[in-house]
Length: 636
Image: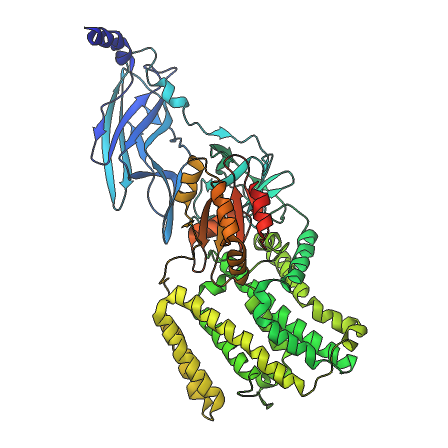
């Protein structure tokens, strides 16, 4: 009886509920609802109400690379206005990306010229999961007068106009004045118009002294003189998301961090200087040491010549690498610092180069001068050493370098190249000092017969480097890839020790196109660690578990030194367990969209990256060179 009485009490509300017939399929349940049960001066606020089955979605007003948004028409004389949409989510289905809506979705619109006691509407929509199904429905909504029980739904999840001034630079950087790094952890911009932004590419967030900057991956159709309205979602440090309607006005070009470009040029120089001390450059210490020793006892003129040759090699390789990196990103391909080592073919080529260099140091062969420019260039050594220094040092980042590279990749092309040139000058600065300060050259030991023995000894680090690169290739391409590399190495050995060199060398490089390109072994890991993923990170945050994230790669020597010397040490393992810190390892040896996105969110474009996320409070980025004391201090 009580239940019956309660039902009688609810009958008046149900009578006032302005809801049409409900059209239900296995994929969705859709109805037409109203905020009122009677028009006001012929106007009435209506909405299409979707209840989508799990895994199914409809499309936003800008569907992205595929799909169609819902459409509705009213029976005359009523006229339907434009549908209003909540903020979408990004659905990545390579090679396309779409903006979609899932779950319970309300699409309000205003109807004009409404007369009588009913509204009739026809609606079309596309509902998709693994396949897309076009659906259609005819709705009849009866108006009984008075208020509607559905009125409360129209105020939920409403997008508000942004209170923050917004500008859009010619190179596609959305700059927002107001939000701070302490409050904003993530952001994403959904443009209302299609074709201006590459939907599948990540949007890199950085921070300015007065707000945030979001680098949009713009297309060739981008127009820097026109406003680009859209929805900006901001996620705070606690995971709460806010959706703002923004219409950024065209503004002046700036670096992503809103800092004068000169600051990043200086940071790049310091980063390049410190890169000489990083474990990444250990493989080329042999080549650099011999290049220095050869200068001993020579005239300052010769020392200056060789120093400038080394610097030219460094700058040539740095500018070429920067141009390739900027070109790939301009073409919509997500690439970060050290991206080339994610290619098994590139790793195999560098392994060949280091192997042949080791053979030369070991005295197996010598390059003789001739009419060929490349042979004469290799004989001088310094230019070649500069090229190799950049190629082998490029996988890792040094202090000051991470922010400078991230700023370069968000800046216009000319300032970006300026930052990379400063990075190269920093790397070459020890040799430049020999050129400009005569006293340094006099301190070098004089070459002699002892150099031959030293040269043989210094071939060992080169062979060790070749073995390390073979291990990297094994992680990327499996045992079959290493076997092919071995065939190429034997062919190269034959090429440099026998007269018929060209056919043997050709055999070595013929194996490159058939190298496998998929990872063949599990990701790099540490004791008591789990692979990094967005789901694992979200689960740890939900459980309020502190997390230490290690973004690493097999081709990053600095990463391996930090892991074996610090993170894998029993003392640190016990410390993490005592403080209930979960260790997540992200392996960037091969390309990973989720790891690239995480690097971008933390304003980095290369590895290593170490982030400690406490149970409460802001994340902390640790230095590129780790010690047990640094890890313990960050967690305490």
